[in-house]
Image (tube, rainbow, N blue to C red; front, side, top):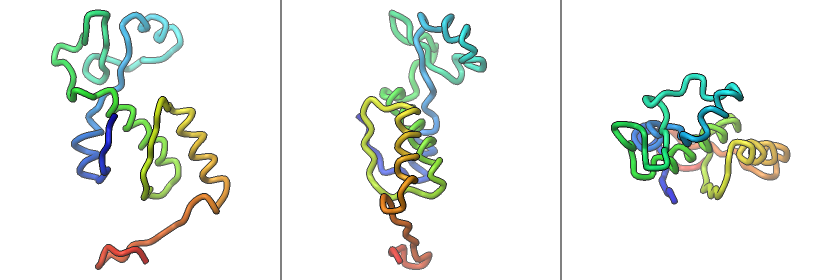
Length: 124
């Protein structure tokens, strides 16, 4: 589980460095599907049956969870506005994230657009 108040600073330090990940036994199938074309041990984590193939190990003990949060944040950016709220995602992925955005944006009664005063930080 990952719980963070996402600010630009937290995003840059705690989420953005989290790499995508996969399993060694899936590599050939993924390549055959045209996926992972640019993948390397520099930008992805490769799990073997014995552990992590990356010589430097993980950047965070929960790096996979942080990468899933990175995916979620990126997909929610499809909304086109900053999001103020609490998001709980369990066993989610890109398809579910995009479906959420489509559903949310399908009905203006599902959201409220607010503005903040630049001087006080208060909601206007």
